[in-house]
Length: 175
Image (tube, rainbow, N blue to C red; front, side):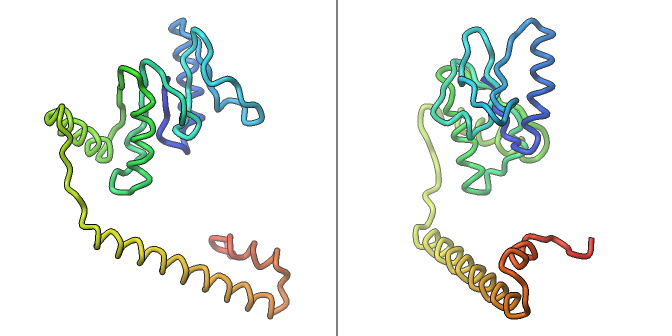
């Protein structure tokens, strides 16, 4: 299985990979190729090409995690994405990527391998984690309140709710 960690580029990665695999006489099962149908995840004799989200719940003997540079391990979602991709393997894992983000991931993997079979990590200060989580929740609540006030003001100025919602989604109305 090949898992693309770069969601934006996954389709183009897979088109190129499918072609290269075919030239090498290897069949592939690109499960992202047809957005309207959901093919079986694994097909006998074929390499499955998948995103992390589609790979959840599936495993393969060998997994290639491609594009780790597209993920930052400084965020919880980035770490979760890597964890999901890495734990899809039953035996062998290969990781590829370029640049600073890939270097950080590789360094962390090397540290884990050096400590094997022990797992060593710094336990976060739970009070600080709670504070961060509370601050994020308060920020989200404030953003929602501002959005509602903005929608109310637009409606008061005569905009329909659909028009107001469209205005919220615009990045720059003058472009």
